[in-house]
Length: 569
Image (cartoon, rainbow, N blue to C red; front, side, top):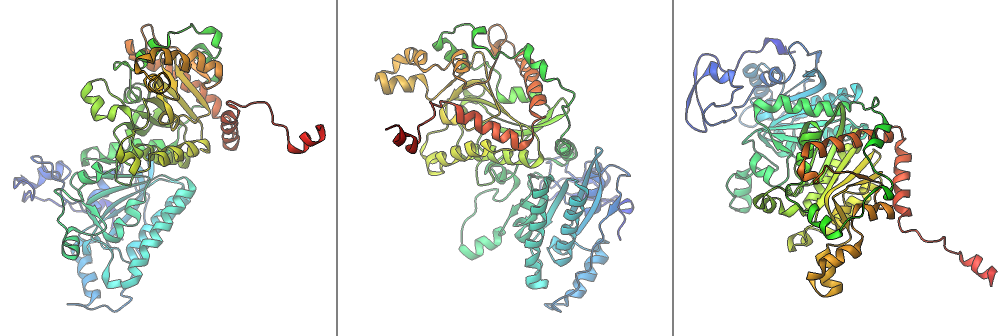
């Protein structure tokens, strides 16, 4: 078995020519730079041993998973026997196979790591590699430890025929078992990752990160161009292309990878807020309508839309520690109008999801004015499911005029995406708190507001339609928006009286826009208090209570049954 502590550095004393920019870099300097070109940032390939040494804490490796010999099941011969190819790969790399699997820690967080090595027959997926990845997943399952997979492969190993194809199913079901057990999985895509590896364990993880420039795809560019004669766009299948199309969570330079993995692994630990006191919320949260002053509805609308109000990202940075934003719906889109990720609230892991508008006209336009597309709601759904899997609470922050109503949104199923989120949140088996921090508009807001506790900031609004829309439809005059605002009952006091919200978070003098720090501090106190209360409730009771809460909204007198009505007659 290859020993992690006895690896030879890839770059010795020689000068190395960067294949990207053509710069000559001294080997020792390149090693100090984690094999990243100091001129252009090109990420040179690492050996499996180098990768493990970079990722795992020194001296933390407790075991390295033994690699079974897959043999030569077909007696395959092309220009030379397969057995000779295997033997030469072993001599040249010093590895038993195209993957190494180890158990250790990253910043003290326990982890099982499987690292592929492209030098060994192109990192191809054969029976031995599939068995090793599966055993790593089984070890993670037995130890209830997160699994990190570093992928690098040209695809399935042809010399092992259909048996290599079966490894896609074998590894995929192993990751499925980790899903069922609530164990975090993280994939790190390195260059290149193609074929059967890309179409199985490399893309099935909860979080997918990629090194800059790393390529990932089912079919390689040469195969696509030769089979269907299709011209490929610039940067096709690179990490940047994948990120733009919502297929990965982030592009992570090698220098930042350990820190990012550490933050994600800390979230997997869950943390605890058991020392928090539920009573602490009472000093901040208002739950009696009579304690709130009357508001001018139109003034509240204008205040809620103020560009200086703190956004979801502002709250993420002010309220949470070590927030990691997750991107993409894994279906081709990463909507900028919706932020989703995980972080720590004073030691308690939470998932945070919210609308994002921005503070300037340029940022507003870039964020689609806070109006999510279907991809935004599907990104939220993905993180909601991740929270349920890990058993961590969810906090949503609502600030949107509504879901985006454009042609493309309708083509991609806007109504379906909103409806799915509403249903998903209603049955989520973890504590959920929703806070309207600005403008809560229609179903686009409700898609993030089906929660155990629904709160609203005192200067925020929540309505079935915008005042302008209501005025245009019913008054036939958009200028009647102030009148419509008053009629819609969209202010905090009226919403609390109707039971649409459970409490009001008072804003600083002059509104949240006047003091972001105070607004964030009040939100933090309220979240801690309510999460302390909700954490004591069994998941089944949480779901039942949440469904009961929304069932009772607008409930009329109990209907008379048909049988009872006949008896009365």
